[in-house]
Image (cartoon, rainbow, N blue to C red; front, side):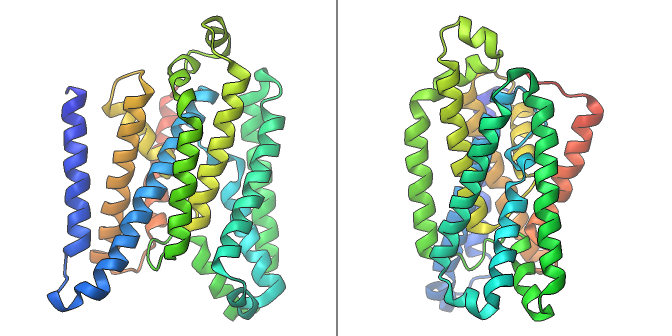
Length: 317
């Protein structure tokens, strides 16, 4: 099937699912209350879906591996450690007094600092990128998870419920100010990296080939790593962790769009991400009646697909 038909199907599916989400089960009396809340949820889905798909596509390209995502370095675990530490130190009452904006910015700052420091170590020697990335990411992720679990055992059970609410991504009750701040940060990040997107097609050939073809490799990699850190940090701080979403949507987009052009692949990945998140949200609301978090469904499907990729022996393209 030609790419334009695939894009058409994805756009129609996205618009159809968004319209269904916005108006299903909505009575005329509930428009004033429900529509703005649903509009914020849809906006958050589009922002987070685009950020995760975009960052994962870039990450897989610069690492030349289709089974890696930025989550491998432990940013999700670090986010949970930050939230657990705040509740452990200040308690639920103290966290309520701690504004959502301050919590959001604090999470972003810590995740970005950690990511940039880790990237500087990981990509210092080209030959160790892949295996060192996997090893260090798993080690830090396990460390952060262990510290979080240790503090969760010590806190009051009532306060533990507040931590549980942050363990799973949620697109309901999105803070409007944080949503606009996230949109502004992501748009600014896109503008920042836009001149370097033309290098992605060449970077997929490998470091030596990219340098031989005139790509400023080190400079481009630094730019992309900063962008990945910002996008992952913003999306995680806004709605919570979704571990396997990027892996799932990017690889599905690669299967659908058989092309080496990253402009096409990124557009398809974003559309697939929106379809997956909106469709998953509808399933959670209408089928499971909120008994199962959306991130559990995404992680189950994405984790199964990850195992499939490992068994198939997928290599970078």
